[in-house]
Amino acid sequence: MTAVHPRVLGYLGRALSLELSAVQQYMTHASLAELWGDADAAQRFRQETVEEMQHAERLVQRMLSLGVAPAASQLRPVSHAADLIGLLRLNALLENDLIGHYGEAVRFCLLVGDRDSEAFFRSLWDEEQHHAEDLAAWMQALSPYTGLLDRARF
Ligand SMILES: [Fe+2]
Ligand SMILES: [Fe+2]
Image (tube, rainbow, N blue to C red):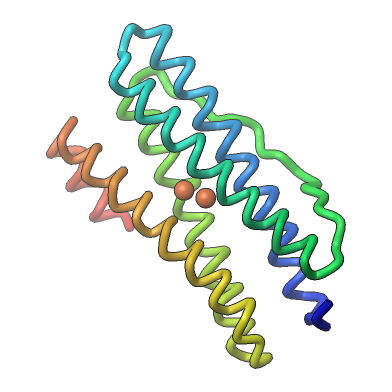
């Protein structure tokens, strides 16, 4: 068992809460899309659910390898919207929070010289960046004009 900075454990715990919130949100959005008769969107959200669940699993494994009991303390309430583009906007916000969180974790690990944890957080950071890019492309395909507005806001 490696000694690790308590704040690194904090980043892991908060990440687990965020990833499990993402699982709950994508799972709910898949069911919503199904209800709306949009099988294609439902399938894409289901795929996202699986990927976020795998992220949560990697966090659990990392915590166990550091001798810490995984305990996600706070699940975010799922946010809803009236249509697909609305759901995608909410998902973009959630992915943005994950990117911000992992970016902060990476910077902290660099600061304290924890290379192992830095590499761990960086790979999750990378994957959330890809999620955000895929979402932006999806939004752009659905509604080019809205996509431009969203980019202007970030
Ligand atoms: Fe994730
Ligand atoms: Fe994600």
